[in-house]
Image 1: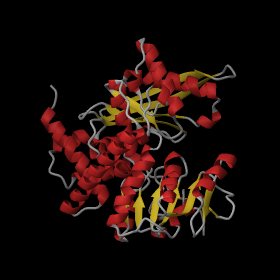
Image 2: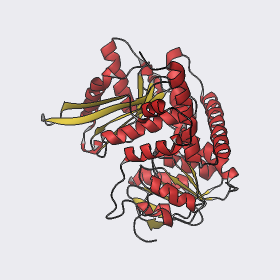
Image 3: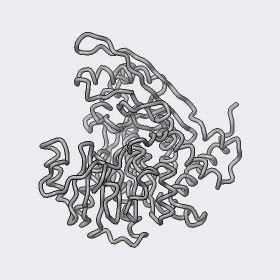
Image 4: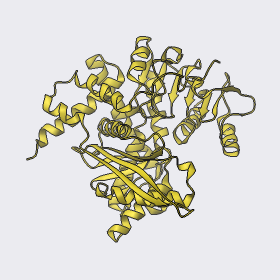
Length: 425
């Protein structure tokens, strides 16, 4: 099916912070907010860079660089992930923190936006080294985090175990257990039912509404998913169970394709056994980025940012794109796709289930009263339905696309909160 579309040779990797700012400016231009408030929302409130040593198993000491950025905390404590990746930069953290601000406001939960991470390939560390690095990073950013100030959660290459180490480290500093300092924890220390599947459930719930509006019957609809991790993999399971044909899937190793639809449970077994989707029996092999160009009704980018760019947007054949990853589409690709009539459901709406259920987890920890999964799913569906309707109304009333509408809704809510609170002192 041609060359791999991801990371086109000679194409400069777009700056994620520039993308976030461009999206903000496009939405803010359409709102009647004061220049003072606009200037306030344009910049992160706090940025912390830490350089810290970690003793490796060999006895050598290695320096690491980490970040924690709080974009806006007008509506409540900062909330955002922690990622471990070689591509982690301050600009990336700024963008992700800004998007988290908008995401929390879109689903109308009382959090602001933050994000953090360490520049590292975690696969090069042993489990003990990873734990020592996590605990030292948590100590360094303890200047900012806390159950009432900034609540980290899992992101790329971090999981429930990493959150448990951060929670334990913070608790040791306080002298008592503080489960509400992080979300995405194991159930045995205050985690929430439904948290691991929350982002995928929200993608599915929003997709059902968006497909209906785009007159795409979900049963037997063809779907391509780039990314087969926690979000992409679970979304594939839900779609398969609802009768959709997941025709293409990819991960770091490459992709697989079958026009009649892949057997998703069997594909999960194959990946558990081999560590990759490539080589799945009976499927045609694809390059990682080729998934984006597959002929399908629905495309779900569920990998990383900057996947749909001006270099490959013209090869997308889907009618509907639902962004499960954060920032998968550059502004240039956005414009090209919209011009072709492709409908895009933005990340800050589609994958907001993760932060919504994180909010539920935080509330449960503060109250020491926990809900069952049925109640979690009910509340998640309620929150997402209200958010989707509000974004659709904004898009209709202002005659804008869904991304601009979602950002306008979020910015408007935060601007109103900023005006009411005033400027200190």
